[in-house]
Length: 343
Image 1 (spheres, helix red, strand yellow):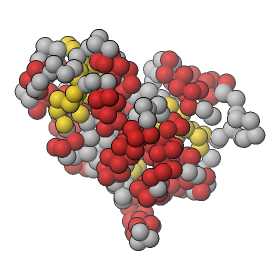
Image 2: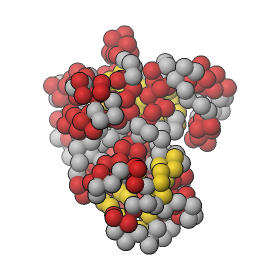
Image 3: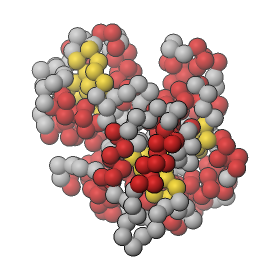
Image 4: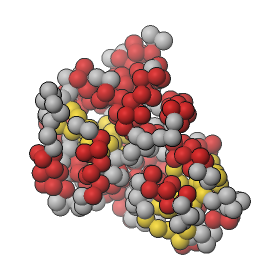
């Protein structure tokens, strides 16, 4: 199945009450590739940024789903919030997500849990027009934002809080995914945005400048993780374990196979040059969590911030949003140690 077909799903309304039915109809309408069988199920990735999704791309294209007995293909659903909605509605068995969306989804009644993690910090940058000389210059300016509940949305709120501002002090415009946000600022329509390493690099090639480097702060945050439903965990723990194992093995492969990882990035995402993808790879490689454990500290911090918006968050515990049995098994069985002892 081609990335272009999946990208068309961005145009579909992903309201939770209809997501599952709409998604099933869409998937049924997608023809199989010539000479290949249709996958039995799909894993959703929620960003077209290589910094956020390249490990999922590599898991599929380097054969780790197949190696661990998983007949999965990938589907692009734009935004972590929509990915969680699709998961809850039964449209997919697994989705990538960020901690904020998992928290919001569970507090809203979704029976979901994080089963592994890829990145446990917030590798974001605030960047914009060259005339923005300092963080304080952001006040009163317009920002290209992602939809509420995404990592990009949370990152911008956190960055503003760090300089004594809030969303009330800027003119926020919901634009959507990273490429659209960068384009909106580079074209002069808006003043600044927030993005990961890949978006920052792309923005700099278009003349934009970094205003705040959040990556240097190393803030504990549940960034890229894999989420499933508690029902899936109860009914098919073997599949969940194989999914977690496939992802962990991909992280090891990714860290040690730069050229094929970069080529897979080029297949799924657009970029100005191979150098762009190499820079994204180098940054991403250092951030990936080898043991794939989620960050309870990052979830706790997010809950503390969310408590000011949702009283339910104040009563929740970080442990409520994870199921660690599968990553625990990777550790106790020696799977992770065996992977990295080969280096």
